[in-house]
Image 1 (cartoon, helix red, strand yellow):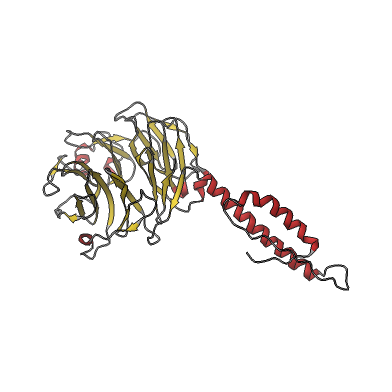
Image 2: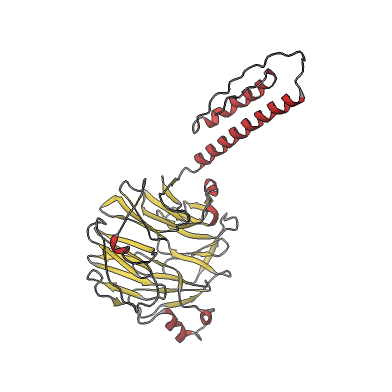
Amino acid sequence: MATLQLTDSNALLLQSFLGSSMKTSNRHFRISQARFVPKASSSSSSLSRRQFVAETAAISISLASLIGFQQAAKSDEGLSEWERVYLPIDPGVVLLDIAFVPDDTSHGFLLGTRQTIMETKDGGNTWFPRSIPSAEDEDFNYRFNSISFKGKEGWIVGKPAILLYTSDAGESWERIPLSSQLPGDIVYIKATGEKSAEMVTDEGAIYITSNRGYNWRAAVQETVSATLNRTVSSGISGASYYTGTFNTVNRSPDGSYVAVSSRGNFYLTWEPGQPYWQPHNRAVARRIQNMGWRADGGLWLLARGGGLYLSKGTGITEDFEEVPVQSRGFGILDVGYRSKEEAWAAGGSGILLRTTNGGKTWTRDKAADNIAANLYSVKFINDNKGFVLGNDGVLLRYLG
């Protein structure tokens, strides 16, 4: 910091402020001590107007800087549960999914738009770009949507249609050919066992493989559009305006799915063994933003504009009740459960909320308000490892 030259008349003012502010700022910042140099006496006993204005301006700049340091320190102290991890990627990249190798939770992969694949080998503290030649041999800018591991086997899917497979914990990846007749874009994949996986498209097609992806079996008999064309008169509000794709889709540990229509005017569910998706009227006035599964087997529902709802009981239902949250009018985009009691919700403009009683009440982590990004996804790998993914390459790591 530049050395300040002050007259005796103003030195005490800055010295007094420094004495009180350094106690709160010293933990995060090193601030050089100001050096006070008395000005030589002149024939006039009073300061000229020009001298007074110049020295007052110097003090104002110093005070403003110190106040800024204090505010930054308080912001860092407030973000006690999470820390920002800075990534070596281009601005504008939206992070979409994250997964770790089950047998080595220090080794993980992070996916995003603009052909982004990042890798970590220290548990997520640092990340570096990962090049996969089989995904770079075409002139496409892939959007990698989903990744999943089971043992050392892993799968990555993206748009335009691409499927990558590893059998050695991600040390090498091979590209698996996909049919050009695949209905819709692949938005989700789940590793389910040895050489086995489950893949979902945004048109509701669910495919299952048990031989490393060389052959796929359809788990549903038709796409969602076809289902709704048959049931348009069944009382499903908004089905006649359905555009044919999902906005979001989430899978429960037992293999059930819940998906939100692209316009958010209704939702659909599917359970293993069912031939079709089952459409449901939305239980709330506002359109649905996202839905997913609680740790206890129930459902959570996010409405546009910041509403959060929890289903009554467990399993698939249309009976929901609203839970008050401090969303400040910004939309909540995702919920991730760390345990049956603790969960975190994230959303637009850095909204970050926490519950420790299963979702009955939520408190806002105000320190995250200063994060200039939308937070799209909350992922807990286990009780001690969690991440929040956002746009502009924003990644938060759970500290606990």
